[in-house]
Image 1 (tube, rainbow, N blue to C red):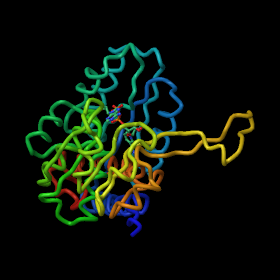
Image 2: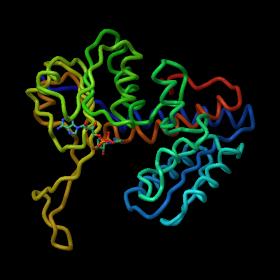
Image 3: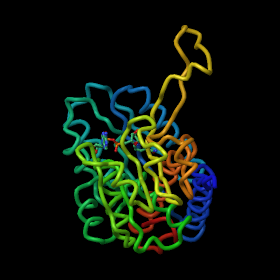
Image 4: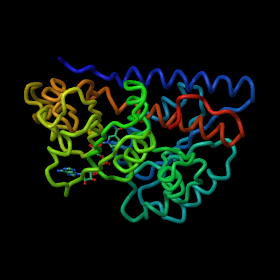
Length: 305
Ligand code: NAD
């Protein structure tokens, strides 16, 4: 039987509606408008697209959006000064430093200079530690979005075997912590894992976060498993013809082979339209959560881990 397609785009719209409703309440009842500051260093085209999308969606849910665009050769001291100012600005509840940073900047140092309470990316070492010890934290947006979709689909995740492929700090590791927090039996697989196919075949839940186009074939998937595809890979699509400059047109694919995996999975996220839209929606959710915590107010339900 063909898998249920988990509609991340639709789910993200629902998350944004919940965020917008909570923002409206904060404005009406408390006179507070949540604010998200995004800091972009340099002119990386992909980062510019992300920052624009984040700014647009932030204002659409009624929050204030502050963009800080800095020269590519901005010094570490100048960037730290910008972050310090935002840390101390009460109108800013969330701070996001767009990654990757130019090579001359120490990414760990910069990430850890953001106030943990405003760290809506959930990358600060304090938030990593809080998440790892099962305490209230800011949770990285992409894994949070995956968790929300899994909870929505399964109800309880307790006792399920989950395999996370990929051990990055921004997706794989926090994803594994969140699944553990929901009482899954978790395996983290990575580039050195032996017999990856056998490991994946044991999974009730597969989260693929590798960055290799369509590397997971359908015959790795246990019948009825849920497949969450985090990967975003651009591949050539000769069937779409040529671009104006004569090069072959491209399309986006995930880390799993959607056609064969959807024949065996019980449910699967598509690429595009799966995990991707949930990431920015969860950034907005984290910002409203951070705002509530900063003001000692009740957090919106269903928008945190
Ligand atoms: P990363 O490069 O930091 O980590 C990739 C991980 O994959 C590593 O831990 C590595 O051990 C593992 N890996 C590499 N080759 C492997 C192999 N052959 N077998 C098993 N594991 C292997 O990547 P990342 O930042 O975690 O991102 C992963 C993918 O998710 C990328 O395609 C990225 O674009 C995408 N992504 C999507 C979103 C979203 O919003 N949808 C957000 C973040 C990342």
